[in-house]
Length: 294
Image (cartoon, rainbow, N blue to C red; front, top):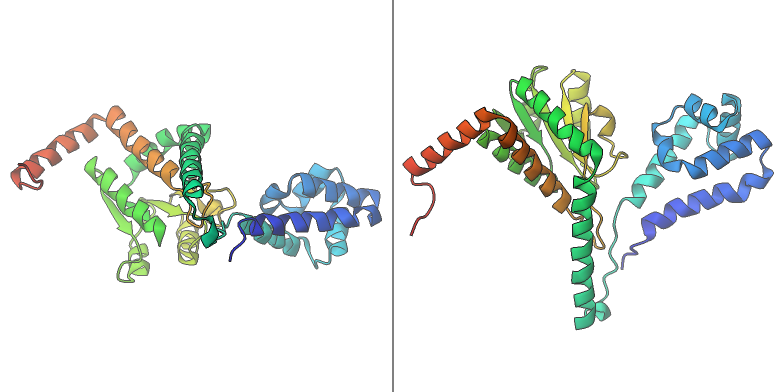
């Protein structure tokens, strides 16, 4: 049986551990502890100087705090914070046969619907996502080839996105696990291309490694993910964040689908060449009798 609150409890226990030891800290170290408790989600992205400045103390005080918490260095403490925070992102569902009454099933359906609607609103009303759609097409128009990338569930989005963009006349190839030749495909990507990667919790190690390699090779990267704590976040030039809140083991991806549909709609409404490509595609569909007609 899995506890749905396990991830959140891990983070809570960690913060409580800091709080319990605060009274024994010096005033400066206590300031560091207070700042970390109030801004813990920012710590994975901070340098030791960032924390010292924000807390109004010296770098030495931050080092002393880490020592008090039994970490050999700030980098070790920061990694521990990242691990604890990412653990809170992993959903666990309490499976119990006693819950499957008719009333419970209806409440589950209602909650799933509510969360799906909320995920769509959160994703589509995100001002950064709205601004980034235009920026995405600016990158896409300059790219020689667009590569969409995703593993496991994210492979579905990589494939679907390649279909949508190809319908608009763009040259697009998906990089998915397939027959295992994704490393070979990655090596064909050049600096005048564009990579659009999908990476959701629980994040595929291979995708993170590949994006780091592509980033090191100065290749533009657009990332579609669920949180700024995504390990791929630091390698992206442009990031779309999709809300994936759920009450069960599998994340809700309706926000991501709405985002992709919006990207497609934006392209059609802003680029005449995309409309022309669709018209040509429809003609080919007709010539090849692609679809069933009664």
